[in-house]
Image (cartoon, rainbow, N blue to C red; front, side, top):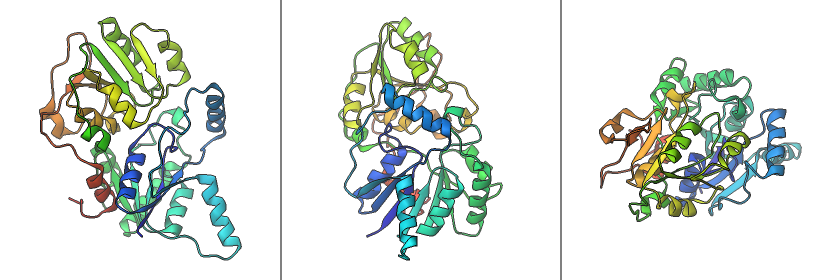
Length: 346
């Protein structure tokens, strides 16, 4: 059986992201997937996680079902397993492919030891990542080593934006741009028009990243605004008592689509930050799959979506996108092929 080691950037029970989508797609195609949750990168991150668990704000247990064929392993447990095998002179497990999301020396070493082929999927420019993402130390050096390995054919590089590809290709031989895709739950759903003047956002909400002023402006214009996902404490304090704004805890995709179906528009109100030029949220493709208008700000929308621009109600300081009916939305099956360098390669 073919196997994939995914050294992920998020915990399995975090908001559903591309890491989960790719792991689920690979498992549905017969891959044996080991999904390794990231190790804490600082004492401050550990302390924040403990505080959030006590407050029950940033985390929700057992939110994402684990598909058949996917094994979720905490990073420290994988390390203990490997050390135990070495101590007893047992052969290390071998995977056909490793997909790495956080450029650390330990992830680099793990991928080289345990896999025959490797891909660094650079979906975060860690140089401009927010401080509360806890960027790994020496990430630039680790990326440099990965780029050098790319030149020798021992590592594949992918990203979701042209700017990161150009940056990596200054040191590497080639970096393939692989845009995100829509999840099956969004592609299969029979979408309705939704309630007039009801909109919403789904995904994690950090005050440092999401423009809450845009949310408040929508509410002041008569929109009912729903927010689905984990909210950091600073954002929660501002939002939880606001009129016409409803907060829903993180939910499985099967539950998210039912709530989104009630909206007449979807908003992705990101702040202008250092990473705006490389920010390509995978939720954009899910939002477009609804065929509802999508109002967005400060994300790196691909150029080929310019034909899908649409008008935005007066007073909303965002851009608009709406996919034409019967237009095709990419699937994670094709994207997985491109990340692995298989049949989907263009």
